[in-house]
Length: 173
Image 1 (cartoon, rainbow, N blue to C red):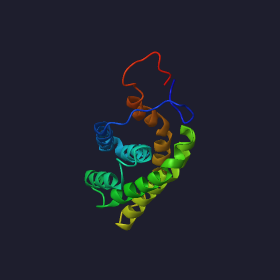
Image 2 (cartoon, rainbow, N blue to C red):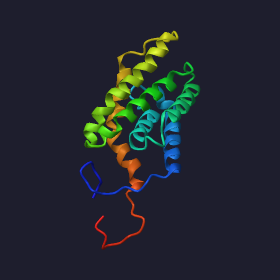
Image 3 (cartoon, one colour):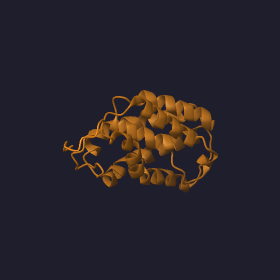
Image 4 (spheres, rainbow, N blue to C red):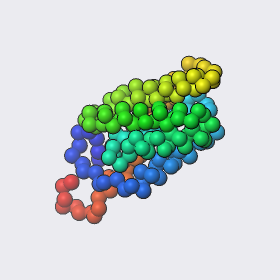
């Protein structure tokens, strides 16, 4: 049985090394050459938003700023472009976290869609203010694909927390 917004299944606390590993893998996925394709999701944005919703005490705007600077350096973008977008995304996700967790994954995805579009729009605005060209309207495909990946990433990143500490067939939870 999979835990959902209606289940009574108790999750174990997340291990800090797992958060760091997932954010590092997202950073590596963003650095792949496929990042320049129009519909590629922003993996750091997705994983950062997930942890900002689920573990807002452990993953905050400081993490978002550091990861944003790393992406700015990796992309050769204007310094602060990704950092500002990720910080605002993390703030928005943290402020919506208590509300979002009451909804099923499909409605959670609708909550994060405006956050992803806003973060992408901020990056576009800063890029254009720095003299870059408008990439075309296909830049809106990335937040849509990122939103579609919300449910699978949620289930994947919550999977290690579902395991019981010890197995007891007589325990109801």
